[in-house]
Amino acid sequence: MAALDGDLARLSPSEHQVQLRRAVIASTVGTAIEWYDFFLYSTVTGLVFAKLFFPHSDPWVGTLEAFGIYAVGFVARPIGAAIFGHYGDRIGRKSTLIATLLLMGIATAAVAIVPTYESIGVWGAVILTILRFIQGVGVGGEWGGSVLMSMEWARTNHSRGLIASWPQFGVPCGLFLANLAVLALSQMSGDQFLSWGWRIPFALSLILVGLGLYIRLGILETPVFSKLLAERQIDRTPMLTVIKQHPKEILLSAFARMAEQAPFYIFTAFVFSYGIGTLHVSRNFLLTAVLTASVLSFVSIPVFGHVSDRIGRKNMYMIGAITTGIFGFIYFAMVNTGSEPVIFFAIILSLVPHDMLYGPQAALIAESFTGRLRYSGSSLGYQLASIIAGGPAPLIATWLFGTFHSSTAIAGYIAICAVITLVATAMMTDYTGKDIDAAGVYDRR
Image (cartoon, rainbow, N blue to C red):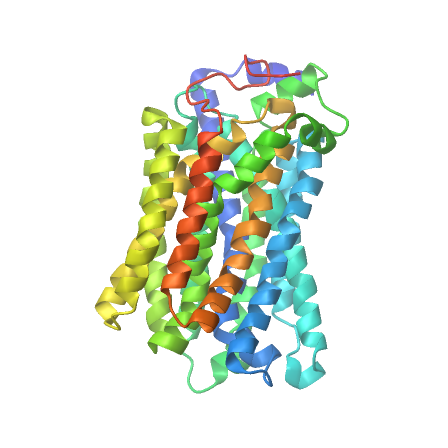
């Protein structure tokens, strides 16, 4: 590996640019595939799973049960972060990312063959829960590696926000592909989609995983990790070390995600059960609206990442949190009009406040940790939010609406998340433009 480090040091600016471009493409494509797998489950949960796996439950209870399995994936994500964060800081970003892609793809494809309640009773839901857990472990290890694979190839300290935002770009790509796949198969006649059509997008995951592996196998390890390895600075127990040395950074990273993650899953997962059951709009209408919103995110995520390089990571992030807290009330006021054009516009707008946070988020979190512990620390901080924000959000939204019979309660929940994010972000250090590489001024060995 020392020889590899020497090869990296001898790269010309043009060769380095080629490697940076390959790393960004590999990270973005791989992340898009993993999030396709994860969001596919999210989309189908609100449309199908309550009917197929909990057919004898009251519709509201069945939806809660289906979202309960959905939340299992989020509980598993910190576990994946701990496992793959350890290996990402021990054996490298590239190898770890290949493992997460395989794990996620196989678990997703297996969902395509899970028998329903009609075939094996409650065991169908049990198998679905296990596969959802494996999905969560895979995606839990994916994010940190993808961000670092891109960010650690950055040549300057003033472009990390933009470069690290590209793996984040994989989220709307995955959302787009998942909704597109379900929308295309929703055109089936009669009950074909409900009986077997929903399985096809899960099976297609194997093809996408093959593509992702082909791309990821062709990239080099990052210069930062190669330097750490050459200088024998690899920590033997990075996950334990980062928990001992940086508990504040881990917790602040998790709480800073509240205003980004909780509303996102309300706007992209809960919206299906709310839209069909309460607003009485069609499944295809909602799929098309969310799909269109994801296209807008293709542009807004890297734009806000770039803006954070100019005005500061924390400034951009706090503006996004304030916007999100206000927008929750505007969103539900718009969708509750019952007018399809207004609902459509509200869903399209819903991801813009999210993207104001998500664009700079990768760099904000990753910059909080030193190079030798960065995969472990950033992954754990990022994925802990899935327990307190993303996973419970559809469940909490469903419970709030069922209890208070008002969407204002859900908007209030979003506002509370925004306040938590503002406080946590204010306590974080802004390293925009500063040296955070393995040998940098911030390396607290």
